[in-house]
View 1: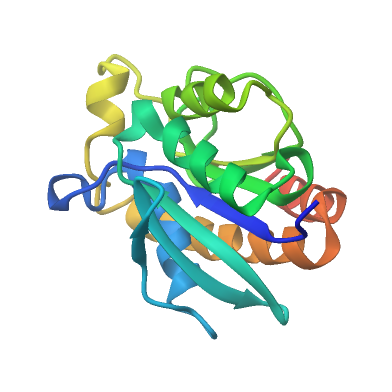
View 2: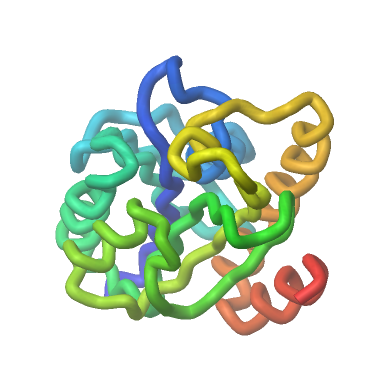
Length: 193
C-alpha cells in the first residue's frame, strides 16, 4: 500500500463542457487544487494531475482527459504508477442523475449505477471495490439523460450545486483525514440519507 490518496474527478475535457452537469467531478478537483498547497496540473496518465494539501496530507488529484466514457484508462495508469490500493486510497467523484439536485452519497463500492465513467473505471481496474462520491444533478425527467448531463445548470440550480460542491470538498477532506466511515456518516446523513 502506497499510502498516497488519489482523488479522481470525472468530466469531459474542453471549454464546450465547462459548467455542465456531467463535469461536477472536475469542479470538485479544481476547487481542491486551488486550495492551500495546491499545485498546477501537469499532463500525465491521459489526464491532468495536480496535488493539494488536505489536513496536512499531500493528495493526488486527477482529471482524466479521455472523455467520460473512457475515464478508466487514465485512472488505471495512475493507480498502477503510484501503487494505489483502490479500496483504501482511491476516491472517484462524479455526477448522479438518480440523486436529487445537490445531494451527496458516498459509498465504499458498488455498481456503476448507469454512470459510464464509473463503468469504465470498474472495467479497467477489474474491481467495483473503491469508494465513490456521487453528487446529485437531479432527474432529467422527459429529457434524454445524455442531453441532460451535457447541459448547463439553470440559474436556479447553480446556488444549490455551489453549496453541494463546498460540501463535496469537505467530504473529500474528511475521507482523507478520518476515513470513509466518518465521511459517510457525516455527509450521507447531512444530505438526508
